[in-house]
Length: 361
Image 1: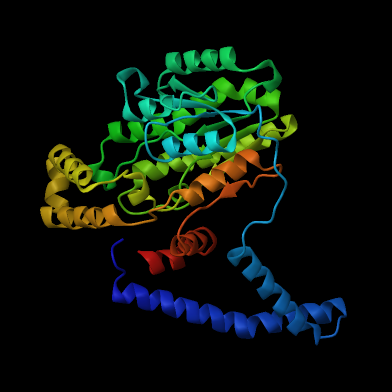
Image 2: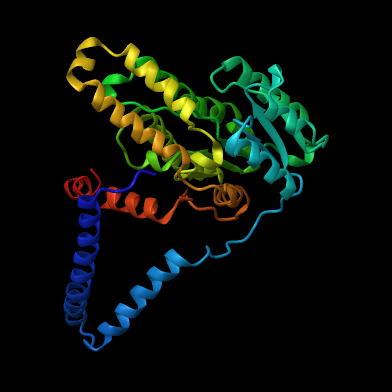
């Protein structure tokens, strides 16, 4: 990740100090007023502060509390996007845990490496399915295949993990409408298309819908508007579906991974170079003249700096997905990300925009 400027670091440190001072002096005064209002002794303020702080530490620093687990045996899960990255690793992980896995691969019919790797399991619980989430026909055929391979005792499909997705970058004026449509077609419409197709099976099992969004489904950033638009849509769709499925006993969870560029290989220097050439060559002449080549190159250098950044281990993401599938009381949202990204997401989603913009932009 590119280093923070000295000015931005100073702002962040100053904000942390200010927040500490405000809490240190303001919180006791606020609690004193509440105690007086409730007719309680003001000496209880210290205990209240200790309890609040201890609760915060428990929330941030400790593992999640056990909430019971479902019986894995006989449960089947559909995962999309199993050719590479999270999907491929998740298919192996859930198979190891004992689930029957229907691994949807875009390149199964083209002898894709990920599909072949999963087929080499030679297991009755690992079923590789040709699946392009943008194709109504392939989604329909995949669902028919799943129906034909479910055991009677399974009473439907236990879970679907909508993992298939694509990513790109570029400033708004350099990004074509086709790019926006392409990302939304895969990341958002693909999620909706697959979910609608398997939802009757999920309802029968009172199962799970797990949608892979991103931290960029909760906050925006420079150069990421096509990706953010599609992932914000996944978040909204998941919320609406969760409300509707409550009556049926179906749990809907969203996974919001942070920066896993290195772990997934989703962004490389070659990809940055190819995308940069496409963005510049296809940009309108007026946009090129207004922004200038030096400005454009500066941002492309920023994207290259991200290629070796982020978490190298996918385990936090895989564990969160497994929890969303296997817990009796799964969380609504999971945020497997580095601490600084988690703090940034909280700041940008809870503080006034003027303040978060000043801190990060």
